[in-house]
Length: 119
Image (cartoon, rainbow, N blue to C red; front, side, top):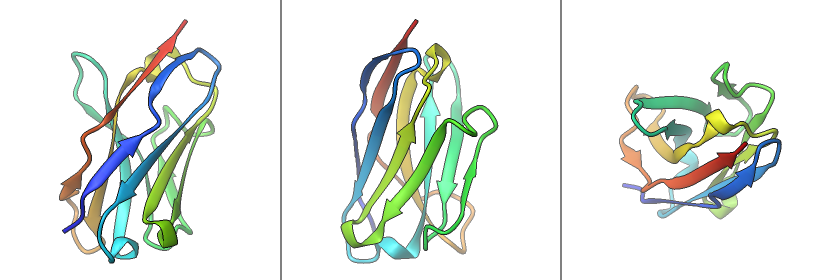
């Protein structure tokens, strides 16, 4: 089991940057692939990106590619989402999630952190 806590959300103007953090409990953080998702008001949950267990590979949704970067520090049990050139349409609650590499579903989720981008 792993527990996830996001932080770093807030209000930012369009074109600005934010870095979200997701701290994980437990001693096996490096065994989990980590993902970031978001949910805007009135919309379904959207995949943002993911990072492999080693951190060597990352994958992004087209909507954020080139603007967002996911990284992780396994020694600190933390995954990050660096968001640059933010747009009003990036406004959402952002969630980190963890899954065992052999499974498709993300079994563990954080509580989310709000990101609001003003125009």
